[in-house]
Image (cartoon, rainbow, N blue to C red; front, side, top):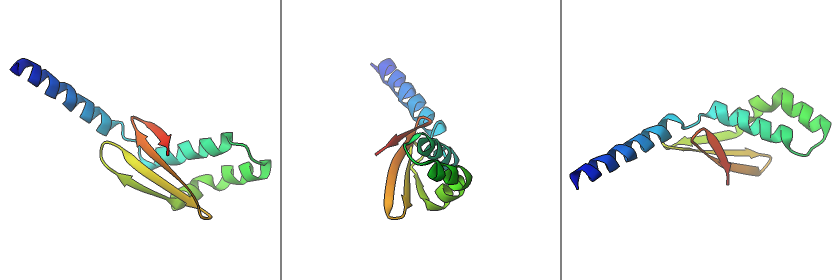
Length: 94
């Protein structure tokens, strides 16, 4: 029984370490959101402006909260917001 408990704790510890190591940062989020906007439907002018100023705008309008195992990102532009969870080097829009 003790052997199973130790193995379970090792696996759980490994999983927690893996979550912490693959917790994406704000730079990765900004790159991801810029790609999402580039792929979305919109006018050429809008996409062009976003290509030039997107990183700066997203950096300034995004709040991030790091919970060590995952992060929450909130971006608000002109009263419209988006929230995403960053975990395992991925972003999940909420």
